[in-house]
Amino acid sequence: MKSRLCRALGCAAWIASVLCALALPAAPTDDLYLLGPDSEPHPGVPQGRVVGPLTLESQVFTNTSRHYWVYVPAQYDPATPAALMVFQDGHAFLATNGSYRVPYVFDNLIYRREMPVTLAVFINPGHRPDQQESSSKDWGDGINNRPTEYNELNDRYARLIVEELLPALQKEYRISSNPEDRAIGGASSGAICAFTVAWHRPDQFRKVLSTIGSFTNIRGGHAYPDMVRAADRKPIRIFLEDGLNDNRGRRKNGEYDPKWDWHTQNRRMVAALTEKGYDVNFCWGLGTHSNKQGGAMLPEMLRWLWRDYPRPDDPADDGNRKPLEARSR
Image (cartoon, rainbow, N blue to C red; front, side):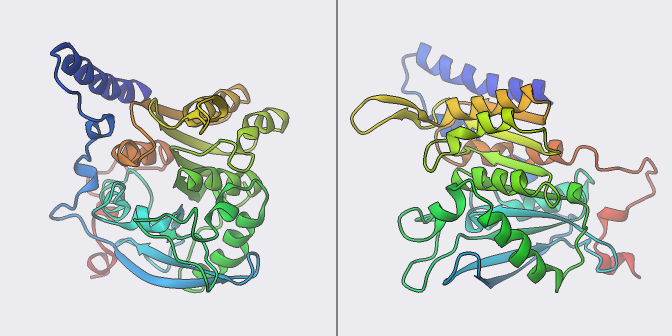
């Protein structure tokens, strides 16, 4: 797996070096990352449906509400518990014209049995009545509750997910209670937030997807590597993605502060997790603090997270290839 990633990233680096050698202006590094066929709809692949926006009010973060959407795969059967994956900054992962395009990726990977039948929840950070909701134009750091919910290392956001979101979902859908069937992910502050949920509640979530994770000193996130080393190993599987050209810790006064270096802190996280024996994978590329590299890598990251999902050897078993309606005829 890692060798395939390294080959792909090596090709991107080779292209950039050739451009420089030819004295041509190199393309921005993010432009080297293109979405593949897993991120596109295909004829014959059943498409899931998206329900929402729905509203979740919170007692954990009082006087706040947030919108969320639920992707329901075409193969979902209410008689069978489904896996679950929760994406922070839901608007970014839901958009089928954006960098991640999760509905298309899930359609394709579920169809090929490279991941289980999985409900996806796309949840935005909360906002008070006098605040704006996050959007593709402003993810919310300066306009709503995003920094408080996503960047603090306490268990408050985990409580929102476990005590408030999950019960709302379980009223409508049958969800597996096995924490191995539950994943959580995000980008930037949403990534450290996802790890924090699994860190506090590995009894509920044991798979984490992190792209350009903000394991930095926004609100103390740079402490996580030391916390990982000091604590007993938890049953968490995690894939981290980041780019060499992510924010590199140059402060407003021009001084370098490693606690604000996104790439350095992601590498520190991988080192600590590896040292403690976690099931960890990573992808270091050339990307900046954007979603281009993470979006291109998303299908491979999901395959790795769900790599032990059983696939039948019988070629006549077409279970996941058909939507529920077709299978029930």
